[in-house]
Image 1 (spheres, rainbow, N blue to C red):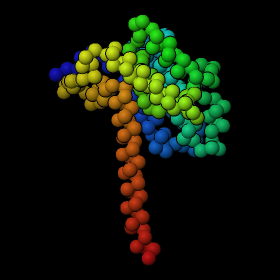
Image 2: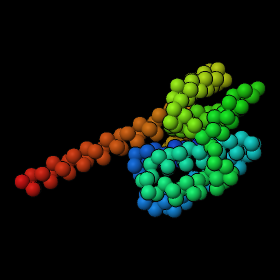
Image 3: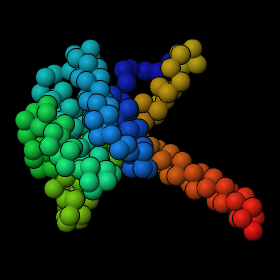
Image 4: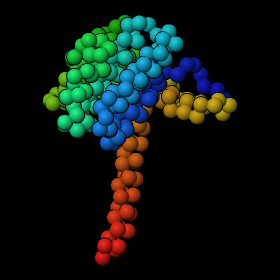
Length: 221
């Protein structure tokens, strides 16, 4: 059995998705410089992957921009209050693009891309992945219904554009990459699996702490 066709463009966001999940589950560091370097590496790796794949310059910019926006927002939401000013001084979006309004621009670019004829399905799937991973942008404080409406519209658009059975995949047992099946999932499935994995880790950590406490309490008694 073989895997038909190249991996979807959204698969290039897999490492970003995993890092966002780690951050959301509390895997932050007190050293903001180290965290910044890690996120910079993610953007550099994505840029290289897009170049190797010969993705059009404007499409690559959109993907990198939404990645920076997602990482900036996630990091700022997870960092301790006293550490946030250090990140806010040089967020990824400013460092790479000299802009500080990704919360607005991501949705603006998405609206433009959805109006294109024909639209770039791979790029729209990247937007779906970023939104599925929890990017709020300008709707962070209010506007949840509007954001939900955008997600529904994007989902419906992708459902119409994707060929019948496009979400199905066949694994080639001879391939060495064990996660190829993961990369071929729909953007919503990728985001859902990452978040679910993070929740499982959180639950297991909690159970481990409860077990440790159960051993400590009798010792104190």
